[in-house]
Length: 174
Image (cartoon, rainbow, N blue to C red):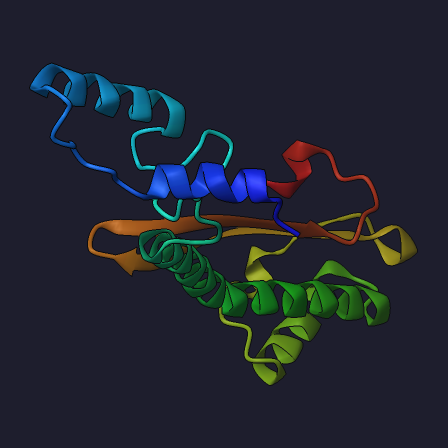
C-alpha cells in the first residue's frame, strides 16, 4: 500500500506547477533546477525507475538474427560433414570385418573391396589399406582426406585415419 507521503512526493514530481506571477524569471530557473535535483531529469524521484529508464531484458531483434545466423551456419556445416563421417564409420566396420575373416593381406584387400562395393564406400579401395603382420596379429590401417566445398573458394579439409590396432603410432597411419 502506498503511503500518503510517497503519493505527495510522486505527485510533486509528476505535476509541473509552472511559473506563478510572483516568481521572477530567475526564480523559475532555480525552481526548475531544484525540481531536477529532487526528481531527476525525467520527472521521477531517485530510486523510482521511469518507463524510459527501465532496462530491457531478452534478445533484441538484431541479437536474435545474429544468433540464428550462427546456428544456421553451424547446422549447415554439420549437414555437409555427416555423409563423410558415415562413410568413415562404414570403412572402420569393413576393415574390422575383413581382417576378422581373412588370413593374408591379399585376402583382406579382396574382402574389403567386396564389402566396400556392398556398402557404397568410395573414399578408399583395398589397395589403399596398409597391412602389417599375418593371421591373428594382422593390423590394418588407413588414412585419407576428404575435401568438402563450402562456398566460393572456401572448402573444408577433413583428414580421416583409422586402424584395427589399439595403439597405432602416428607413422603407421600415414
